[in-house]
Length: 154
Image (cartoon, helix red, strand yellow):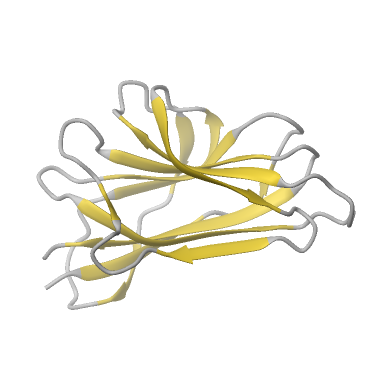
């Protein structure tokens, strides 16, 4: 039976025009994970502001970057020990990021959440894609909140 977990960042300040990974998750040894939902929310105050680019990326974890540890918190399923590791608010970007999906999201009252359809969730792959990242590039200095909801197990 699968168990569900969330990884939520604290408000993260973005520098205009610079991409920043705000949430990351790395699968545990021999414990692939499934991304079932993700979201972001901005605190921009200008109605005419240019949208931010939100990217779902994968990584080979050759360069892990510098971040704050954020252990996944179990939100459903039978109690179990999580195998994945979570990180938030990267000050040094992970290397070898590959963009899997991207969206424009308004920074003025901008909130974006997506639940991936059953059977079409994003999975990690043991050797080629052990990690997933939520990366944001905003045209202006704003703060962003974001989260991943993942599942482990069958």
